[in-house]
Length: 118
Figure 1 (spheres, rainbow, N blue to C red):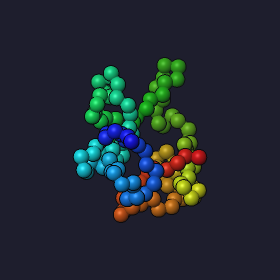
Figure 2: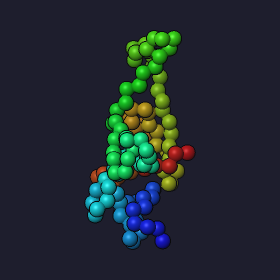
Figure 3: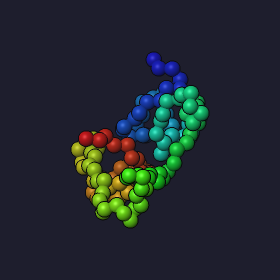
């Protein structure tokens, strides 16, 4: 028996969860963890109990020999990758989230991004 408050990852249909469990979507007294990455609490003020944070978009900088590279100085490239879901259907995407080939991962019109990486 697990104590109340335990959060587990669930990689199946969110409407097919076992009795006694609920999805952390901000309802039924749960935290809203949709579109969030769970991190353990620590002594850092940014990771205290019940806090949220982070950024939806990050702008990294690269310094080469004391010169900060700009986007225009970088050669054209991509960070494409392949992932798969339970039935081994491949989903191809690039770093901007542009899907090349995908199987519908929606439930009631909501997109679920939980997928197992190869």
